[in-house]
Amino acid sequence: MVVFVLPSTLRRWVSGRTEVKVFAVGADRDSPPTLGSALESLRRAHPLLEERLRDEYGRIRRHISMFVCGENARGLGGLDCALPPGAEVYVLPALT
Image (tube, rainbow, N blue to C red):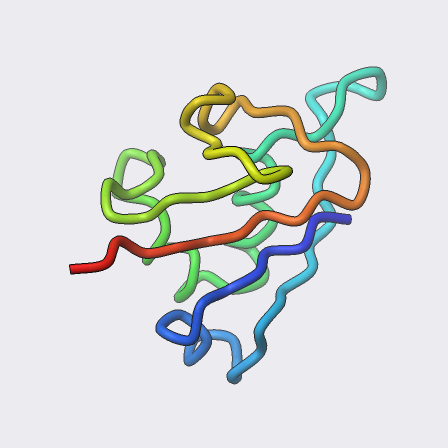
């Protein structure tokens, strides 16, 4: 299970919830889930939210940062970032 923690600006697409839980799996039974696989699960459950997080090529949008275990996912491999069991992914839009 992966928990996406959302800022108030993105909650309207998930009925106002602060967190969204999804089930994500690895490429095979021996590999952990990745941020990319968690976002695919999120897309199936909440497509309107997910399209605000990724662009038409499937990349994390430039104005969105995602933090896994307190570190920016871009520095951990981006969509290939391995997620530990029970991972919380904090989603933060850029501030302007």
